[in-house]
Amino acid sequence: MKSILGTLAMCFALGAALPAQAAVLYSTDDGVGELPGGGGPPIPADIWWAQSFDTAAGGTVITDLQVAFGSALAGQRVGVNGAPVQVFLYDDSDNDGDPNTGLVRLQTVSSTVQSANTNTFVNFAIPPTAVSGKFFVAALVSDTGFDASTGTLAPNGMPAGFDQSSSAGTSWVADSSSGNIDPDNVPGTANLSGSIINLATFGLPGNLMLRAVGVPEPSTILLLLAGASVLGLRRR
Image 1 (cartoon, rainbow, N blue to C red):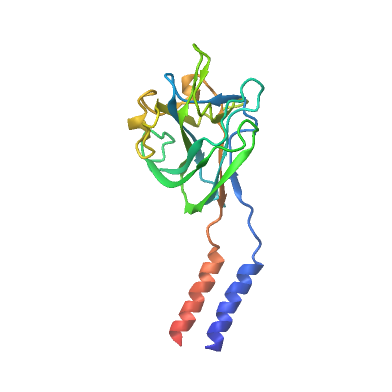
Image 2: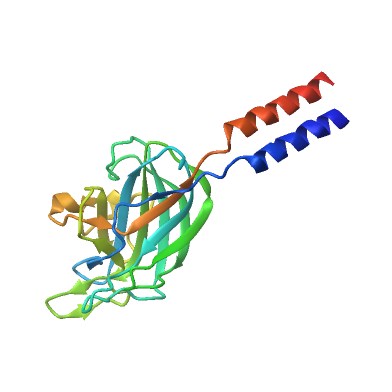
């Protein structure tokens, strides 16, 4: 028994001694939003916006999703704090980078819009979730939009932060009549846009201000040590 306890103690000691690996920040934006986005017309409308990422080594377990709401530019500060928001992590199950197909919801956080129009990324923690290949970070807000013909702003404003300084071609948007979008069937319920639209293809190059934080999977060394301790127990 003492030798088994000693082996387990060694596992924990070695685990504590292993150097911590830096988290991976998944991001395509530069941290400054030049344009806010909302749904419609007509308004009010749902807006669902998403950013695609490729899984990176050392960041295969997603622990946090991050969103910057609205725009800090004068005259465009139309994100509305307190608006209900859902933030999602999706798997791209067919790995084609297109959320119109193979979109599988992995995690959802229900919260409110915070720090709107400040270029501040709000952090939404999720249970650690493994990803591989391509995945999406997305958000959904209802009762949004701006009607330019009347100058009317919907109750929940224009919540999607959009960086126009460069474009990775991986930003996607869908909109629908308010309350209509189903997060498990976005392309089938986007009755205003008709599908999930790639913004670069639509003529709006840029990067939506959605991010994720990833960390490594548990160390292979620790797994091997744990296996060795189990074998030692069985031999006893």
